[in-house]
Image (tube, rainbow, N blue to C red; front, side, top):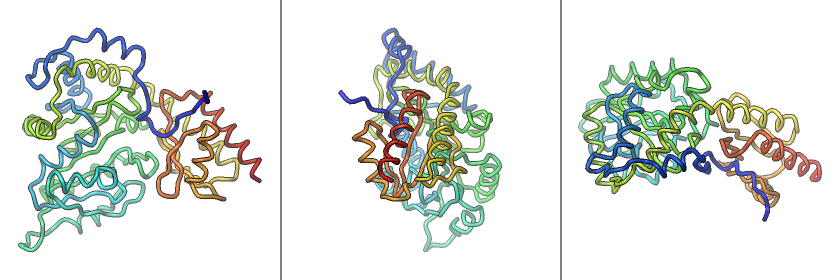
Length: 344
């Protein structure tokens, strides 16, 4: 069988041996009834890491974002989001479907919407207008290359939201990557948001699951919405056991993935066959354009040679994670370089 190096996403990570062993030994109950001890342990750990009093273990990041929109808004309101955000582009129109709200998208630069544009997009109290119910940010920002939203920017958006009495939600699917790269604790990011979601199933290597945090009232409401969406867990402790290891251990190794991304982007840039915005290489993602062919053509040819990647619009995306070593990265670079030389 052909060997594959899988750079499609950090979602392809598999649980570690330690996680599998922890699953086999986990003490479980019924989480809907509130008595699964391992889920309780995971949620208590998440409280400490995020500084929030309310925590809910949920199925996915998308579920967390959608629950948050549902809790924070009323039907007919409007949410402000960046035009390339995950919530807008990749959640199947869930804001309209689940919460009956419309989206006000703003063009961003490296994931950041300008404060002026956010302010101008907040609706006035006019009977003809929908009320602005929520501002959503994404950190790290996937479509911008895994870039980190500066803390100072988040603080300024928070000041604006408080001045206008609007809630804020963070799609923090990869917030631990931001923390690993900057040294800023996750709880420092979380303090500026009324709710935040982060994923256990990406760079943190759990097989599935995410965490949603906020104040106690928010989580009480979120728990009911989770149930409405069919997200009530039963013996969820088997999965929570992985999540505990994700937070305690796997979050500490994310810098290794960032280093792989830097090695890859530097070597790729030196080939002269690809266009890379090095400013966007901040965490575990590298986006680039082949100069002589469409991204899809490059991806299909690499697949035949055992290197898996995904396209995003007209770019190729490589994501670095626990299941690809630095040696794998160098071997993949060798395949790309050899292919490039043959095609000259």
